[in-house]
Length: 299
Image (cartoon, rainbow, N blue to C red; front, top):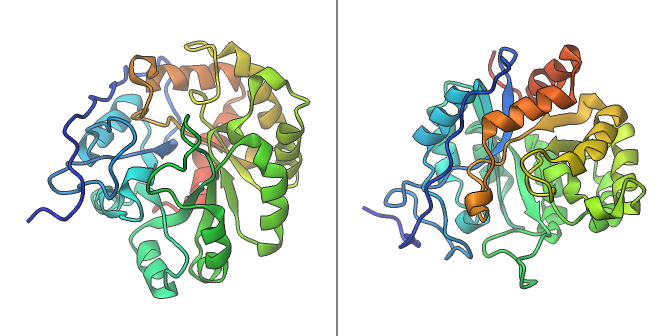
């Protein structure tokens, strides 16, 4: 029987990648991707503000197999609200090599969070970004809920993943620092390239990174105006790597919702990472060692 929810009338076909030119290290991890559908089994919890992709777990596994990321972390997309069913299903079929970031609202019990952890969830996502119209993405959960969940998250070993404007991080990080939670920032902290390296928001993120107070995901496509080479991001990427490579993660953001024809090729993104991080030991750290430490993959 189909669960109650929204089955989209139109879906997009995700761009599938070519293999990267450079071989990845064993157990390399794509720390940021999403699964959607199949919608008869996993309908959306909210009517999506964008045409959602049809990107079930099997297609996600095919994508990872093509580019050579043995491990992966799936992140809750807003249209699924707090329903982690598609992610938990992918984890259950991932042979210990898939972990997840779910979403939960204030009032979620410690027992419910423990069940998520036992199913392979390692963090909860909280969103302070807005749609182009200035509205909260339907189904997203904000930082107010995070603050209410801190005690239960700490007991169950879940970290906080934030998707917020770079301008918001000085205040958010100051607010979250006393909680002792591990904090992961999506999409290179949503920096603004036009403001340059001296932007106060970006500098606050760099300072927190140097002090190992945050983790940052090196995901290019949401913050650059210069695809497919992303030359505008190189100075920022270099600054993050120089600040603290032990707290960086690499993520593709596949299947690229709301990007349409601008969706990048995951293999090409990995080649760009190889070019920008020429030190093999640092690539090993970011692609393998750091996600192992944060997400606790099975060996």
